[in-house]
Amino acid sequence: MRSATFIVLLASISIVLLIGSLFIGSVPISLQAVWFSLVEPTNPDASRIVTELRLPRSLAAFATGALLAQAGALMQVLVRNPLADPYILGVSGGAATAVLIGMLLGFSSAFGLTGLAFIGALVAMFLVFIIAHQNGNWTPTRLLLTGVVIAAGWGAAISLILTISPATNLHGMLFWLMGDLSYSYSVSFAFSALIIGLLLSMLLSSQLNVLIRGDKLAATLGINLKQLHIKIYILASLLTAAAVVQAGTIGFVGFIVPHLIRLTGLTDHRLLLPAATLGGGILVLIADTAARTVIAPQQLPVGIITALIGIPLFLFLLQRNARQ
Image (tube, rainbow, N blue to C red; front, side, top):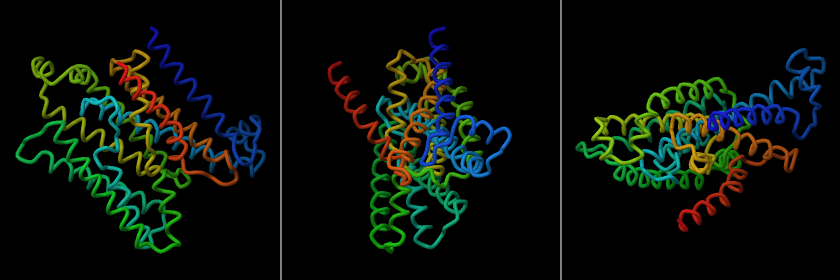
């Protein structure tokens, strides 16, 4: 009952923050004007700001955070590390490399860059999977090491692209790399990925509860470890790819939110996964609202705000683990 109350509380906070994000911004809009903009538009300017700019961006922010938190929770079970990050296997690096190549070649449409990001993420996912799965020797440690090396390679490719890019393209490239929700138009895609991912994750939740206690126990209870590892890896990678496609690279969400949820006592993945989904959405929604209001009318990359929130939390969790 207490766990269910906690999830309901997170859902209520999400709704309140979503409503708040609609009237907070460089152009203040009253709550009454927001309501009329959504129900019966009477002010064309306010209605355009709310329905065409703030609402899609706020929904994209929530979906991005939720996707990253889901992916982080799955990745932490896969590599058996409570501080594992969904970007640790290089999926974001592949997406970023593809997008930067597109920008370098002159791609400007959001749809085209979104497609390139998803293709790059899939290439990175399959590359890590093929190398880590070579000769059938699949272990979380081998997967982790392969992902780290591939991620370093993508980082080198990104540095090379930034070095040879003309100065006119650098601002947009760097802004996207730091997390940018300004051009998030595919909100329906993000929420479709979020809902499908959550449903698939919930189907695996009972096995996740066993796997987190160790491979030996899982094998003893008849779980096919190889198949389960592959399912978790593919699902976490696709969730990460969907988040990167939506907003670029936003750090610290995927490993901090699931870990904080566990600290509240929620360790059952049947409850942890929906709670982490809501928590991740809340964090990025707060960060995005702050990013577009702190120095308005100028906007900050969302990744900067999440880093400012995430770094102190990470150091706190690190010290807490060291004491334990």
